Length: 88
Image 1 (tube, rainbow, N blue to C red):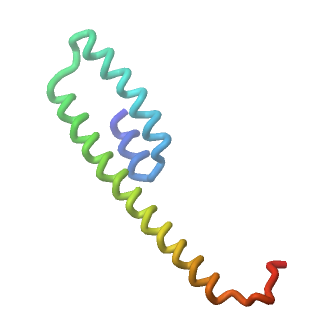
Image 2 (image 1 turned 180 degrees about the horizontal axis):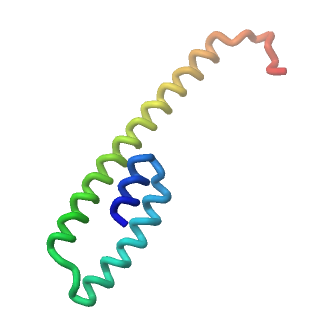
């Protein structure tokens, strides 16, 4: 399941990644309850969580930057709009 999570996150499919994380967390919980969850597996999950967080924060920052550029473009366009143009 880890490769599928990595692929979803890397491709920006965060909704899919969340669904995969939720399913994987259920697997991890069951393994923990049954005493089969190993330290190496937890370490791998920790690395995947850290990587996922970094990618998601980067995507969020890029989205905010793009939104700022679009907002500025709208302001500039409004400043230079021809009042005779009615949009039709």
